[in-house]
Length: 181
Image 1 (cartoon, rainbow, N blue to C red):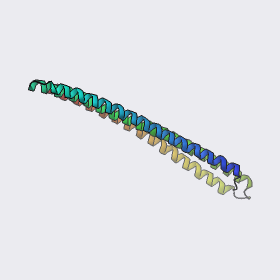
Image 2: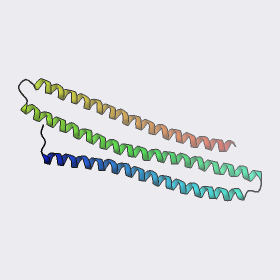
Image 3: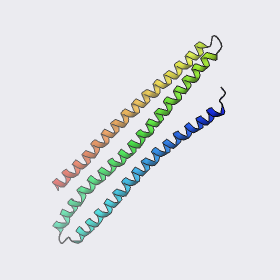
Image 4: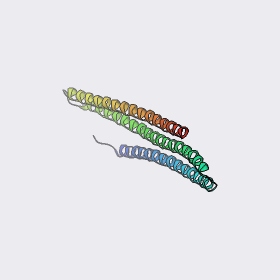
């Protein structure tokens, strides 16, 4: 099928806009991740200064044992919170990219159906069966893609709930260990 220069220009412009949206999502995700890492580094630095000051003021073994417990518990909680934050940023970025991919697949499918409809109008007599089979194949592929997308979303949701459960268990285990000590 012949495309006019205007159609090619419009197609190139649309593809450029899509590429820019993908790049924008990736950059925003990287910015969120860098911001998270910078905040974690600042917090870790401040905590290490406080720990060093507290360690310098220790006068006996009982104070050292108490200091160990007081430093370990917040560190575990902060590490767990940091890991959850990293996971959340990654999951949010992946979800945004997934939405863009779904939109692109949907747009592409609409274009294919439009081309097939135009082809039906200019096709020779008797080719309706072949075109109907092609449309049926496209519908089956779309259905498979939709099912895979649903499974991927369910897997992501299950992974997130499992990650949160593990994080809660880690914090709870650290608290129990502190109480036992």
